[in-house]
Image (cartoon, rainbow, N blue to C red; front, top):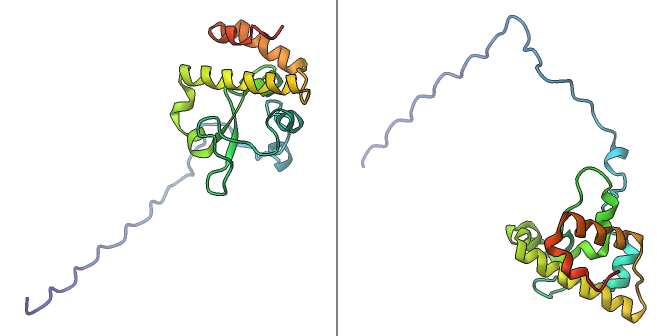
Length: 164
């Protein structure tokens, strides 16, 4: 190619739309939430004292048995969810907690029936070991969670036969 092609001519920029009257809002006007409301305590969050008593200071992933790393932190997963509407404090039991690495926590594997059953079984064994060692004592939230599972998730109720 001896001679380069001449540059393409640019298009004319589109002209802005001029409206005779402003657009009408069809939904309610949104009210900004205060930052304090966003930072309030979630009743479904796990109590740190319970987590420390059952799992110790270093959380390890249920799936990989690896500790928390800066690039792959271990997060506290609610095995049966956070509870939706109603009394969400029941879901804050350590019997509903599975420490998972971030990539596993984000993935779809954690929500399968078999995976939930495994996580619940491992959580029960951790809690019962801690209770046997005397570092943890079952509280009202744990008993309420067991009652919730027996009522709403009878397919998992056999895991809690050792708990009154």
